[in-house]
Length: 287
Image 1: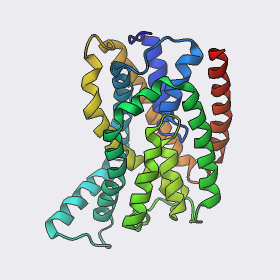
Image 2: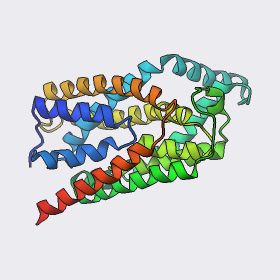
Image 3: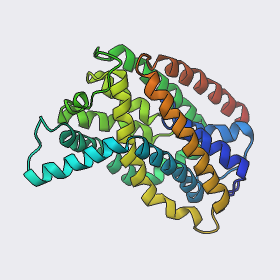
């Protein structure tokens, strides 16, 4: 096994991450499974490879931040406004939304810190990841079946701010599934948000907003490992990150339009079929 990756491998993995991080199909799951399918002998459990993946995630987070920069200005201003008056008003939509995002971020942050070493080892467990991808498909199916009906085709941050504090914690707990490669952060967050009464479009919006601080926090912890102990070369690493950013930009533009009228069902079907395919491939390589 080796840690170093080529420019071509970095480009493929970067573009793959930029697409699948925002689509509800698990970016980590595909990053774990596709190198094995292509016959790439990479040490996917090494700190340097994990740091490379985190760098591509950081590129995606920067795109998200840029895409929603006006919303983040309103959200950050709202948080400071609530601190100034020492209360969170239901009428202050952005102030409450900011604290809802903070509350939804806490569970995944705590679990990620407590179990980061164990979770890293899953990068070298393709059969488990393929199984998780199948379960991710089942989760998306369940989200569509259990969702509370809401009007579609209208972005409304006031609807996000009407989530209760308990519902925000529930969305945060659902997001913890994405710590396991094969489960999607976007898919888990959207499923919980649909159950709590948000439309598909507003659920996707909350998922994209919520992903930004989580990815940035993970990046601050792991990116220094990128160049430790002769790790991944800087050229391929940053080229992969650039490919991730470009793919993420087009992905988010597509998805914000897609969820105006469409559902999670096609992604659920894909995850189940892809998970079965990758599981068979992993079992064949063992025999």
